[in-house]
Amino acid sequence: MKAVIFDLDGVLVSTDEYHFQAWKQLANEENIYFDRKINERLRGVSRMDSLEIILERSRISYRAEEKKTLASRKNGYYISNIENLTPNDMLPGALVSINRLKEAGKLIAIGSSSKNTLLILEKLGIKEYFDAIVDGNQIKNSKPDPEVFLLGAEKMNVKPEECLVVEDAASGVEAGKSAGMKVLGVGSAKNHPLADYRANSLAGIDILKFV
Ligand code: BG6
Ligand code: MG
Image 1 (spheres, helix red, strand yellow):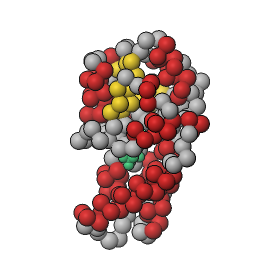
Image 2 (cartoon, rainbow, N blue to C red):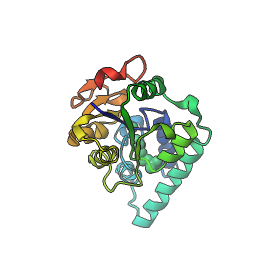
Image 3 (cartoon, protein in one colour):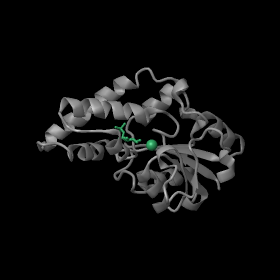
């Protein structure tokens, strides 16, 4: 395999928890029931699609304009949650895996639904490592649609079957498989039936074994 496409939130950095906290704050303010089980469905899913999932539990229905306001309120909370993000917030094994792949001459990319991807990569100081970055600003359809990963492969000039996707989201595992790529499921996706390989996290594994 020639390339690895990493999801960002929950794979390389612990921002998945900050997303949860920000949605929780919004849901509390709007008196909408929201818990960690529902939160699992938001992994990999775009901001507006995530809001729709949260609003399934709302007693009132919101107009399109109000939904936009809710989503930007959540993003405001999220941005302030990640304000103090530093390279120390990278998940265990993430940097080691990136370095290992670079040393072996593999191409690496980010394939994330987040529109905050560049901000996060800059805070972590790892933006320059990547041969391609595809984020929520560049795609029309969020995971489980394969668009984000197919665009990543295209930008690196490699075929889908030459790519390994690393994902913590069920939607992301499905997206990787629909793209025709191999998938390593980690974290919340470590038991996903569609994943080709599984690990608790990037810590303590040699990623080259899957490439
Ligand atoms: C994904 C996260 O990476 O990005 C989702 O897993 C999130 O939880 C999505 O909703 C969109 O993020 P943002 O930063 O554009 O609101
Ligand atoms: Mg993720």
